[in-house]
Length: 281
Image (tube, rainbow, N blue to C red; front, side):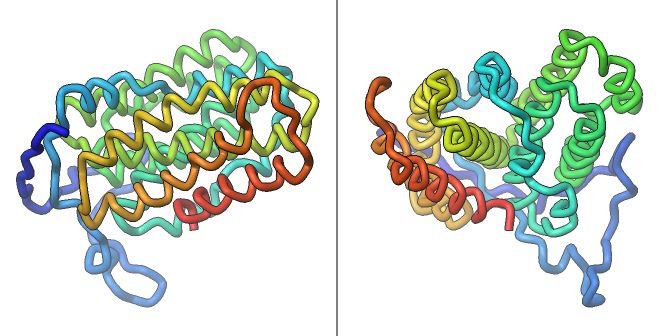
């Protein structure tokens, strides 16, 4: 592996939250303590190798996975999404970034199925977390209004969602927020794998859902390569260890034509569910 260079960055300053997000500042938690005092601020940035950086830059948006589900005629189950009420449980920059990825996948899933009420909820969640992370400027102030206007036009709705999902990634790349971008990608990938594996369990005879899961193996390999460049970084290592557990999913699924027993499917959902729980709870 090529040598990597570490640079220490100063405390990340959160700019004024824009548009959809409430005003920033030092907020007070329920126990009366300042949220800023307990925030785990990401201070270390690793300069990725050109290969890893290119992989991160080209990492697919959640729409690529969720569109496959709609094509496979899988059902929409809101219960598989991270509950919007969990939004208030994320206080550190790390958990905010992970769940920006998680909620981005839930937004993409809802958008593909044109679920207007759910889209509104997940637009708010992603907008709030983006604002907390200092990237709220990628969210147009009329985004909710536009989304509601497109609720009967699937192509326009998906184009709108794709634009601001890509805009988030582009903002992080341009501003050298690499570690945040990695967390977002991990959260989005894990949520996508959890939803698809749960739907595979729900409809075990739907081979296209299973093929959609198997198609994600290459993306997991890329994420593990990127995470590996951070070595024993204290922020990244726990996430890398959790993501590595997802390799077992593809070992169980095996080849495309392998017969899967109910026990196999239970194991797949159990593995993805536990990794997801690490991120959302």
